[in-house]
Image 1 (cartoon, rainbow, N blue to C red):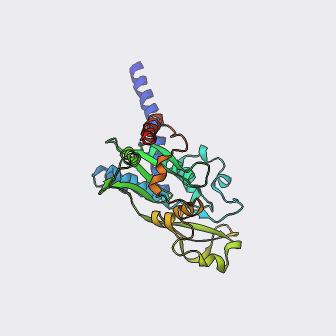
Image 2: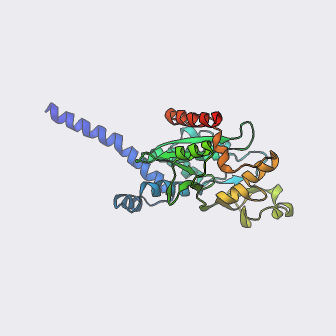
Image 3: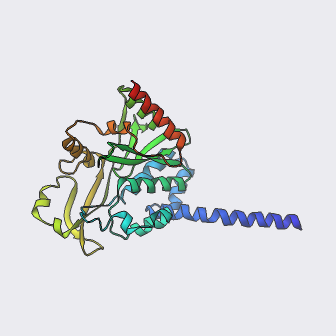
Length: 291
């Protein structure tokens, strides 16, 4: 009798602990506009490799990479979602789906990191660039079962590749630190998000400066104070656009000539949850300074 009660108790604990996790997994896929049964079927049938899964998650997250030309910061992500750190990824994404906001690369990298962790992957973020300037960037690192650590960037909708496959972050960093030629490159995927414009930008002077950054006419948004345009979440456009490109402005303002990849050689902040990754990074970067 006691053994039966023990078995029932264990079964109850199993259902209690596992069902919410499964529910969170399903809601995460739905919040990323994925079909959970189809996603699982592709995984189980080996039609979708791990690399495909992490790439698809990043592409879906890129659709939440909304920007705003917002001098006042009134729709910044932290103001709209002050308790975002306490929210589960699916709950937060579902709120974001019906809200006008501007999100930074850092916040989006955390959301993608947490989404990967929800699916059982080890993940962290990497913050790098030129310290004490606006020219820093943060993206997501996710480890596959074969030990490869993939670079996934939802803010620019890109991923590190080598040949036809995902590239390893540490191998890439070692190649950059050694100054050697390499075959790594960043994929140039494209997704559409929203660019929000306050009334003050709805004039002809703004229209002159949007060759590829946005497209189409401005439309009303869910916030009557803001209009929106389609925004191209694309690495090359976001880095090199003549008006707003990250690297265009960096090289212009700092009067230097750097490539995006060069910025990886300066780590800005810690790598949450993976101190061993941080140690590996620091060892590689230290060797570059010695050389």
